[in-house]
Length: 70
Image (tube, rainbow, N blue to C red; front, side, top):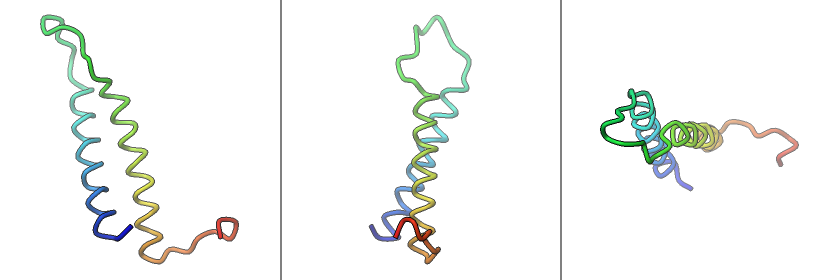
């Protein structure tokens, strides 16, 4: 995967994570009914994806890999 694609996926994952964090932190409104999207879980998945993409960016920029992965 190229650096451009990785960075665009990283920024998209960050946007989804921030949006899900904002939606998950809002107070519940019983008059609108129950929340149907698990916003906190979506935020957690987005943060995990960000972590993996940051590792991928580091390896693309030349960070050394551990010997046990080679």
